[in-house]
Image (cartoon, helix red, strand yellow):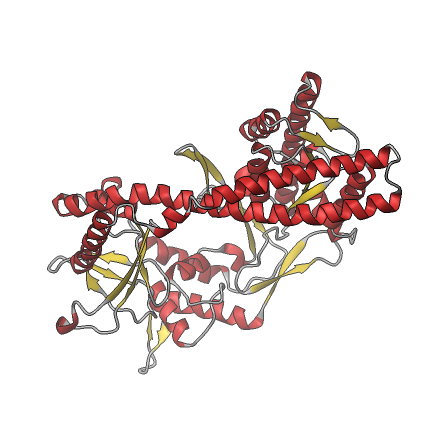
Length: 517
């Protein structure tokens, strides 16, 4: 009989750890390990969920556990309580309930064992999941009310302090506030000054500059951005519209929105105009007059929204990456010349090229791929070798079953008095060592076979898609259609160009990463 342990922290556990109650996963693991030992449950795996997530999609260890439970690897899963398994929506709860039911895997807690084949246990288990979800919603509502109340009181509830401040614990009250960081505060003042009054010139006048030039000037001064990298125009723009710098707390500015796309839940955090603003407990870095002046200037230079029918005009959109700074290259249209692909980072020295030159180079690679795959349609060594481990895996599974049988017999011999305690310990220890070695080999073979299978699937999809791109690309007139078929075969493209000028128009290097690996 093989069992595993699943560990996950809750919000209550995080709060307890802040009060020095010890590391939760370690305490739970010790408790469940002792419980398994006292009940003669052989634990062969421990899954430690170190990330906090509401759904299965955001919990990698739960995904791995469900995959192996579905394969019938375990007789039971040991958890502290039912709510450690799921607090997600009804879909997640249904996936978990059905996985345990169809694999006939027990859920074992220190207080109760749930057998999914038992009708009453199944109902009790599903009811437990429902109550867990209900409790999660209650806790979440209470938490959100508490955060909103803290904002009204002027406290800072964000996880990271905005640039220019550091997060500090309040001495006489619960919660946090902000304290200016002198060096960063000076940069904030400089950004607002340059944007509203301008940068000093040699003739004692001032020239007002925009967000892109401000980013370039800060990079010239080797000032580190909030993320520790180079400054960008979007970073400057976010600073200029943030009222935290005049002593305000902004709440619900980027609320989480959920939507379904291709059967998957997508979480987005769009900027909202319907946010709340409260007086903060922290000191302002700039004056209200300067901030309002910056907003007025920004309103005049407001970016035009992209029309829906003009969303994709670049056939290489989202594919080409700057090989020097790592940012995605962008299309720069021209009224007199062909469109160019540029790196929009002001401080980057990667030079631009005409988009049609890059398309030509890509199609050369595609033509080469088509010839290689036409000549060698099935002679891929890795795909041929992928059939070899099946025999080894079969023998390993038989060996695993044999050792599990021997372990059961050892327990029976101990319970009937054939083995004394010392003999049982020696025999049990030796068999567990053998079992661990066998399971390690099994995992290795399964991983290899899974990888080879994915490669075979990818290979079978890649070959016809390459032929499609090679034959159709130049016949398409719509940039989105070109972009779509390129994305079927290309993951991304690295682009580098060190020279510029008409004599070096084609002097660029690209590295294409195909979706077949």
